[in-house]
Length: 278
Ligand SMILES: NC(=O)c1ccc[n+]([C@@H]2O[C@H](COP(=O)([O-])OP(=O)(O)OC[C@H]3O[C@@H](n4cnc5c(N)ncnc54)[C@H](OP(=O)(O)O)[C@@H]3O)[C@@H](O)[C@H]2O)c1
Image 1 (spheres, helix red, strand yellow):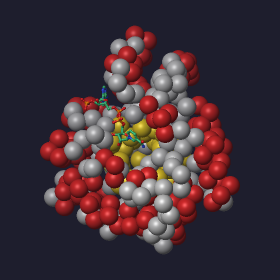
Image 2 (cartoon, helix red, strand yellow; image 1 turned 180 degrees about the vertical axis):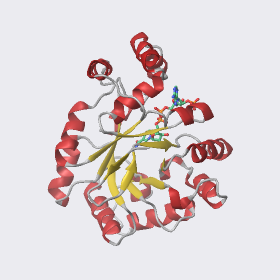
Image 3 (cartoon, protein in one colour; image 1 turned 90 degrees about the vertical axis):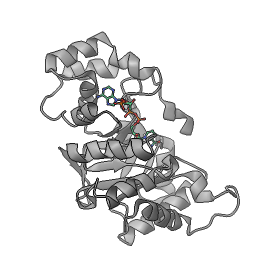
Image 4 (cartoon, protein in one colour; image 1 turned 120 degrees about the vertical axis):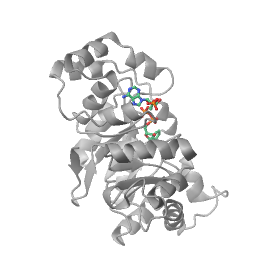
């Protein structure tokens, strides 16, 4: 495994296990495989409704809490409750945090993110900073934020998020926001590295990508994950298949050439599902 080290010395694995939309027995089985394969980063969110299943895996020693980092996220409806447009309850980030900790059966969550931009980003982020300052989380950040939203956050809060988790895959390369984040020291984390819906089979059947995979004796999935980590992007990827869970970690023993990197980036069509957040 390779790691990205935050300025506060937190070491984040470059590949993490995604959990959405897995739940129940299906998720527990995937976590068993991921735990034995050696995943050290697990990505969940209150919205996924599976924090309790991850908690079950920790309590039953399927995952070793001491060896893993857990990311969870707070969503707008959780933050604002049902009365989402009424006056904000200033305690709600810490309440959401406690609730997620309870479901996960842990004393603390390692990385806590705002799941997507919403009307009260700034207040919510200030509360996240307060959680961080109290030592309750090791890193805080956002997800699905574009440049404008990050700029606003910076202007209003006076600080930058440590992490921005966004949808990046060959059809949605997000070069501008990656550059923006790199310039400001915001760590970029990719989700949905293979795209959603029809994008996944299209990418997997791309003949040039299949050729790259053959040249490196890897799968197309591994080529895409390598393209991401070679850009220094932490990536969360989800599989429930034991073979693919294992292979998604085996991307640190080869490198793509500059031409291969450029070709994959040239597939961009700005086709991001996460755009609906922006
Ligand atoms: N912050 C956000 O708003 C947000 C949004 C979406 C997702 N996420 C997070 O990001 C994680 C990953 O994204 P995702 O689950 O949307 O998509 P993904 O990881 O890009 O794709 C998952 C799909 O790829 C298949 N797959 C996995 N490894 C493969 C390989 N090596 N070769 C071929 N196919 C492979 C899986 O099938 P098998 O199971 O059959 O292998 C599954 O159908 C989520 O689970 C979630 O934790 C965050």
